[in-house]
Image 1: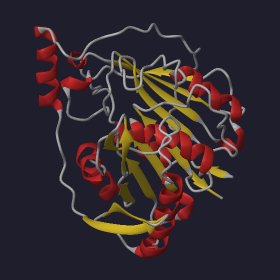
Image 2 (image 1 turned 135 degrees about the vertical axis):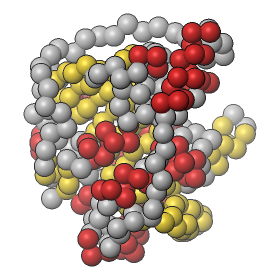
Image 3 (image 1 turned 60 degrees about the vertical axis):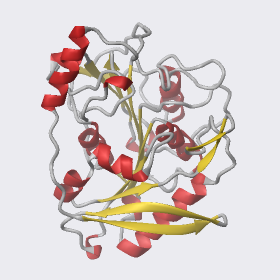
Length: 327
């Protein structure tokens, strides 16, 4: 069961529009696109963090695993702080996720802990690569058990609030969230996926309890693509509908067009909020027109497509997470 402390947006109603899907290549850029990238880079700024980062290891399923813990500058165990788990993408590391997503300044100001777990290197087409055992991977690694064990250890060691423990994943990490919502839905009070929507096309996995979930996805993200892959991934909208149906949410979302704060970034963003779900939960979706395989608000990476500067994903995620706790 969930407590919902506030709504994420107060916006007008509207109907879900089906967006046109287009393809693009990231290997070549026009002069105009290059100018956009340079302007985006100038708009990006980094705040300094004041807390401390600790390295941890844990043995799970007979394998030594590792994770990073960021303690905010005002950390006191008696405060029973919330904790956010952030899962890196395929080929990534916990250190890279920490560097790119920049949770620390927000954690300092809001006084919550951030955990950056490390995936194992498992075989993909004969080559070892760090990746989470998401629904479309099937590596045999018990990542669900590992993440659940880490959540318990962080709660015991640092006084983290087990009722306010959240998880977000990027890319393959986001796909891992789809597994967690089906298999570890009592561990996390709310979940989110950035550039990683991906219930598998043929999976029977469906959430057994109501866990609020948010998706952020770019229209021109090919990793995974908006329209899914017939071989192993459902389309974005089909994935969202699984949760809307499972949670008995209103079929008509509340819709808002976000301010186009930097037109030169090449994107526009629409936010959809499906409410009136069981247990006062919600299903939320940021559709980024012409967006790439990127984390909104971050420094642009032209190789991965356009990076929206309409909003900062890290801040939007915390607003969403902070609305919920388990009873």
